[in-house]
Image (cartoon, rainbow, N blue to C red; front, top):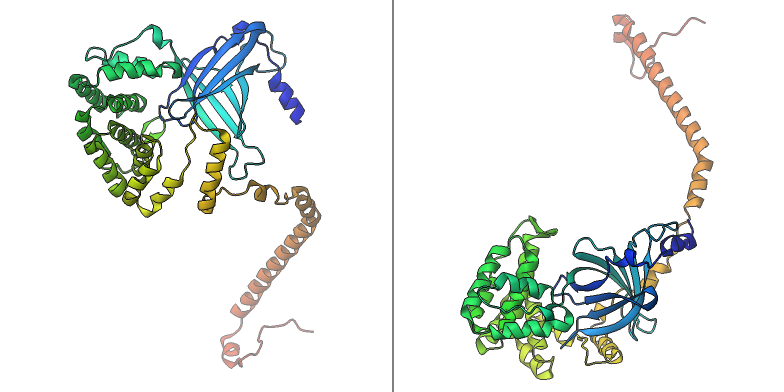
Length: 422
């Protein structure tokens, strides 16, 4: 099957409304800690043109990638307009990276996508990479604002989980209104205890809300969660994750919340985690949050450095991409990082591509040539073994029939096997 046929096979498509309605709408990343694509908006423009807008994680607000035209793909070249599109593809380009996003047909309220990111030749320090995402259908939260009260805890969490990038500020407003409500805080921690064993996604959102409340009353419980003993074993609890994986993710979220409270007590505990915690994921989370909340300033790095373990000091030189810097500035920072830490450079993909390919036809041809000789050799070896076996049995049988006197008179090394008369 040629590449051209494969491309034609998948590229045949129709953009009839009935085909792409499943894709249309706003889709939010289910992982609140996602560092890549956070939000997609898929819509239909004039002339049945499919449009996709994308946002990615940045500081202080998500970066808008812009709008690009997408293409729908049918399951086979002969599909009629009644068939349903099974995939969409779209390409976003910036000065520093080109990203191809392949979007699968939604299943219920969930949409999965694969992003293939490719860097230009001038950026030698980074390898092309692939990322898988899962999105959930988002609603227009600005039209149905839900307050955070003791009576609306579950409803608020569901509403917050469906919020879009453009409406996150509205959710934060409602959280800020409940900042000093200790009853809401107690109920959130109670809900966390109920869901943490069987609903990791909801538990992470609950921890995010607790952290954004910035209530000092949450400090002790957040720190106690970070200090919990890590479970042993590989028991699966949620979406293929082990208990160890799930608790590690909860601890990281708790560290983020603790660092966001920004009181002397909270800051002191974050620095203690960075100094003493045996789990590197929580130490890295503490370092990242401590610097992020202080704008990655040189003063913050100077304050943090005495608390770092030797293996964590490299994180002080890490560059963060935000919406306030240009791609060129980010690339300059990335190059400085690799100059300081050349051991962090990824392997050169060209080293693998330049290796000569093995010609299996050459080896298969030699095998066919030597196969008859191998068969003949095996036949001769088998015949020789059979001959030696028969000869040995005859000699043993002849010895068993010799008179006892002949055996007693036998001289060392003398062959007394009877021979037929000449």
